[in-house]
Length: 200
Length: 377
Image (tube, rainbow over all chains, first blue to last red; front, side, top):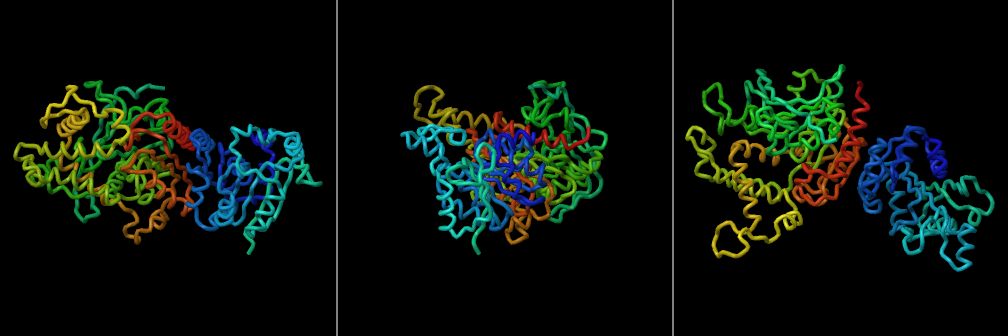
């Protein structure tokens, strides 16, 4: 199971690489619980997910993953300060409404935050905009009229928000088609994973 | 999938070790009625206890030889291939102490006086029930339950198990429950009790010797209860403003369908339920508050727990609202206990926990599949 998950979601391996054995993890918008299950099996994490959809709740329970049914943006308020080693938001940032407030909450509840998102600055996206259309790709598989993504950003944009919120970036992992990207990541990377904490 | 556990029969357990209640009262000996379904495995690790709510009893699933229509109150949930799968689990249902379905209660004869206990039956708490249930478990050779499951007042007992006997329960499933009743909830119970207490046939709880039953009080109590168990929407859907005769009669007879329904439910209930038991059950609800002796701090109350939890609520349940279940979840999270929480979209108010619902059943089934996987064969 692990290999298939990693093939389907290369950001999972990048996230897992940052998480020491036995950490506590909160996964916001945890879907069917695959990441938490992967982290439990490979990192022995103690984790909880927050998820809104009925289907995903029963899938998480089936995956033997702790899950709390709630809207992730309001649901995170239920968690106490510094109650997790890591708060993860995987491929969901762009679909959150109060993104700035959520980023603050992530670094309140977690000692560190890990966020992955599709890079809107990826050259293929830029090209589609240049040719006059909203980008549609593997990372952004929606049409403009049915997309849940309301807050798309580039790597540079995200880093600007972090600076604005006094959040210190501890690590960055940029990928395209599952392969690491080191050169000109804001142009050549399709997905980014960031690790950060509050600048204190 | 829709198989029944089939023909079942109730059993009776006798206890002659005195039970000291939280109130200080002592019951020298007592009996508990119970039923079991499925088989206990070799290392006795697959037992599940079902705790009942206000009007429940030991007949949880299946039916009786002499009455096939007397189907258990949670037969949709408990049976072979059902979410609480009797092919995997050994399931126990009991009638709580103070009940009126065979376990020692106010209508039982007190051997010391030769008369029904009546008003002399001690006020019983959720803690006392858990104590009596633990003794039944011991009698059946069960040192640790795979799960204790209950809805509403039953959920309170399931939670109390994790607090009173942290080593004796691996999973707690608390459904449509609350960490304590709100003032509004206690108020409903008080009105229900007042209906019984002020019925002239109540005779201060000793109506048995007068050969009467406080039917009017019981009926009113049940009617009130029923209103609070349903949602506004469910009532509107089921009854609306429909009239029995199709026209207004300008009198005080039963005219609207909802009136007819409530009276039918009230009459049915008053015909079999004991008024003193009703008083005791509502008091147990009012008194339940594991945080009471800890300055109201629920986080501290759950510090003793070790079990894993599944907490379930229903969106239209206003008597035990989702917010109350989230209080439980919050305290469990604070104590870093394993917990999953499902908020089921359902029309049926508090009664939802007894109804069929795909999502509710999927959550229960998936959770209990994992519980079963932990039990040896």
